Image (cartoon, rainbow, N blue to C red):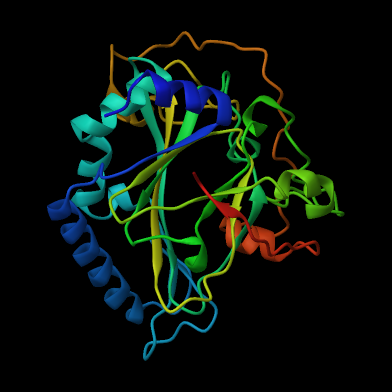
Length: 293
């Protein structure tokens, strides 16, 4: 699916965009699964283990901003991450043995889809090494108008910025004043439905509110090299090993790399999704960026 030029671009920029990875039939099946989930959310009044709801959600007008761990909710989402063409890209970028860390479906409905402020995924889940990335599966045609993912080239080789708030607790976002030059270099990861982006765990990124007339649903998977172990520990080794997607059997020999780390502690005063954590912050940013070349 990708060649040496794209691998080089990933190493240099911290992200790549690969068109047409998801086939039309799977795209149709995925959209049908999402429609069922959104319809079922009408019976839910508050966030639960599956749904993170938009402000204004109601039975009459269901509004969902995230499906949590969709690979556990509907089999189509599990099949996508295990597809041979996806595994081939992951092995080209991370090595032969790769493990699923987690998944989520961020849903930006037309006119009200919530933004995600600037952050680095690494701040949320540091590991023993940073051979980790996130896949963004574009489930809708995505342009700069409907709140695409924005990444800042080269930031995956730089610092880990402060993601803590004024109260000293983890805030899940960076004060925009600390990264003004970087924000000015942000690139929008756009493409037609079925495109996938791959961004390094330390790449600075975010996405603005969707104010357009079109939805922008983004299916995300976090994937790590199998020898990258979470610094906050493994509570269930059998479940951890079951998430191996490709490569040799389980390893209990983590690879240690000299990477910068900021531990996401103490936790926010009220635990919740990134949306709730970031909503408690006082410094917010709404931004523009040029489309990816």
